[in-house]
Length: 611
Image (tube, rainbow, N blue to C red):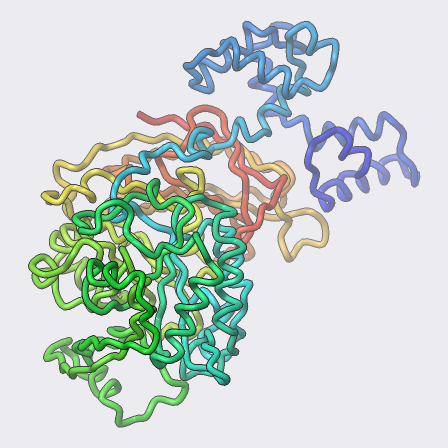
């Protein structure tokens, strides 16, 4: 293994061990010689499919001259810019044999290293850095958002932990949720109220956010406070936010005090914004800037709506009372009539004044928002109610999200921290589609895949038809907004796939599912055949064709499974990325584990073409 590592190629121990054992068994000895070592190396590294491509461009099958490499890059990899320079860079970077490198040529060894590298990844190289225009108002972006960020398992009795914040921030998450409750000794605590989840001090959460805020991205962070504290402890929260975050905390408008449109991510770089209810307007708060407002409170009256099971982001109690109005309303088949109860919330002025561009407003209706809502006011809508809007008033929903930041959160009954499919809410332009980051599964894989784009900075510019206030786009009827893309994927082979859990050696029965997520008419799944008992180097050579109506919203997911019976498959690895981040040509697809970890060297080898 150590010798293989020196050759700067990634190897999977299980596969090496198995190939080694076969070699040793053949020789009936306990030692291998240099020839055996070469045989082991070639078995794993010299993939026949790469040999075929190399031979097609190398007349003597030993060496590629720079001109032949240039031809390969143009014809096969669709490289158009300055291929001469690119070819030289590739030779200098990947050719391991010095004399070959000096002659500006490439051996098969160099070619293999290039084809296995990030330069041949399926994910477009120029999408690995921020490339989108970051000067639009905040509401023009999809924003990576987490729900109940402090939880690291379930919603009822699981631990609350600072690691929830650290890991979300390191993943590029830009909107974090903090549930604040009164704690002892006038110290606010963070936990899932009315449940047995453990508690963490509010100031510890803010310290962790301060430390990790801008490690993965320079762009602004929004702290979504779900505030259950008394005014006294709200003041403590405000003091901690100011003292710990210092200059990072946005405490005043940038530029004009009168806010007619939201500032851009670019203008808010390295800033942390507080999202909470607010008393009065930004302008009134700004006039109080230099006064000490400690001890002052304001009141906000809200209509609490007791109906939809997830209407408030309130918690489901552990033991619901059988006669509570909530239970009755769930039995009622129609969502109407909705009971309204007037509720007054006291809010400390010092905390209220820290809310600048992200003021939480109760959502009443699209009409009400259009008539009354200010650009810096945003709504949180539960997934059940939001799903009804997608179904029955998609056009109004799109119109709403083109103007106002809208946050979607999982319904309260998801006590096991399960997630909904975020795609249906991205399809109508919702900016903050909050997911439980601690829960692995397809939903988080879509989230991670979408936000790989734009350098993983946590902000992705929405397509024009979701930013334009006069747009008539709806996901169910894309009409003139369709720019169809024809996509062809040749699934060639797999390389060092994770062996099956059922295998005592390095075997699996792999198959690949290629799925597209997007507007309803673009949703599709295609399945390869199963290759029996081969995880080291399964070969498919199957082609899949897709036509995608709205590529701007589409994600593509490659999922490798092990067929363990006729009715059951087991997950081996997956990779998800935006359709428009696909590179053309021969590409490798790096595989990720259930929890998003890299399974290197496990990968798929494909050929991509589209127009």
